[in-house]
Each structure stands twice: as structure tokens, then as C-alpha cells.
Image 1: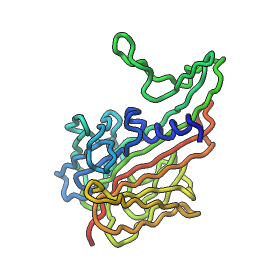
Image 2: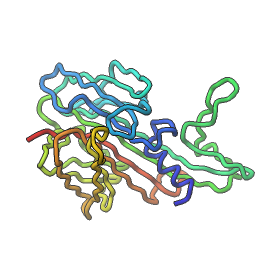
Image 3: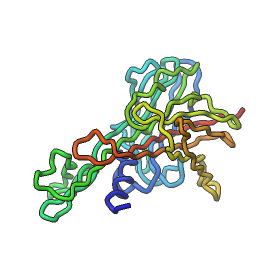
Image 4: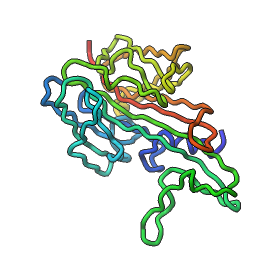
Length: 281
């Protein structure tokens, strides 16, 4: 894989974080996923780290976090704060049903040359100037007509979690039909250890065969082996996951093709990340 392509692949997975954390996993960790009544709150940690769910590297950026209420309308992030290693926020679950919380980001990243000098599109922008203000990132519109070696990739990623107050509902689970998504055949808040769950991976609303999916249990800090499993969707996009034990799991899927919609891009890289809680039987 060319050097620039490796750079883009890492950046696409972590658009909401500085480039320095591109080797680390980004995660949202809810205080729980199943609640009773309509006066509960869920607290969510948002960070990137090597050991999953142990914040020791970089906080997530709260400005990109959105909340969807059980009827699909926008909800509210409350009590947000960002520390050295993690961000944290609350969501009041004042309506019954399943809520969605997370980020959805899209863009174009890559490089071009002007008079032999390479410049980059997307990312965090240029270095700070004399006034200490960082230059905004270049966009496709900033590429001059005489640019050479234009290499652009469209990126899109979702990082989302689901929490339920009372009985589970499915409105916020409905795929939007764009990018890489999961069609939760098994509700994400009804996962039980020892019982297989069925998910269907979709790309632009269509079943996606051959998608690589990584499932990692939390708690790596307290064991020698990571315990990651590498799975692949079938011809119908379906994936069956058996949970060996209760706990929080991080699921990540990646996909790439040559069907970008962005001008001048020649490829597309998509990712989907979620944190799932598996209960004891």
C-alpha cells in the first residue's frame, strides 16, 4: 500500500481526533445500556487509547457528538467536560425507548503537489502561524488547476452507541442508507452471553459481503491476551457473533471501494464503530 494511502486509512478512522492518536482506538463507553423509567441518566466517556475503555491517551471531541431520541428527533448532550485523557457527558433519558448517541463524520483527505511541493487536504490543517492560530485544513476547492499528483480519498465514519430506557424500540436503529452501517437484526441492547447475535452490514443501504469486522472485549489491561476476533460478513452481509462472557465489547468494521461521490476523489474508505454491552443470562 502506498505511503499516502496508509496515512489516509489511519486518518479516516479517527477524523474526530488529532493525528497523534491515529494508532489508538476511539471509543464511547456508556455507564450502562439498559435503564428503567424515564428519570434515568446515562454518563458516557469518550476517548482514544490502546487498552479499550481505559482512558490514558487522548480525549474525544465533544463538538461532534449528537443524540437521537427514541422517536428519531435530536436530543441533548448535557454536562460535557474534557479532561487530559477523556471527555465525559450526560444524556437524560426522559423518553421511553432506545436512544442513539454518537458521531457521524465525512470528508475528503489526500494530497497534491504545486511546483513539486506536497500539500495535504483534510486533517487538522496547517501548522500554527506567528499568531499561534492554526491554518484551517485545505479542501478540494483549494486545489489549484495546475496541481499535480492529486490523490484524494473520500472518508466516512460512524461511532455510535445505543441505550434503552424501558422497552427497546427500533426507530433509531433504522439505517439511513449512506456509508457503512449495521442493520441490527438482534437489538443491540438485548445481547446475552452464550446467545449468538445477528447483524447485517450495509453499504449505502445494500448488504455488504466480505466486510472485515473486529470484536474486542474490554478489560485488556487486566489480562495478557487481547481476545480480539476477526470476522467476515457472508454473501448476504450477515454476521453472527457469539459472546463468550458478559461485559462491554468494542466492534469495528472497515470497508473501501472505488465509488466516491466527492469530486476528484478516486476511492472511498468507510468505518463503523460501536460499543456493545453483553449481559449475563
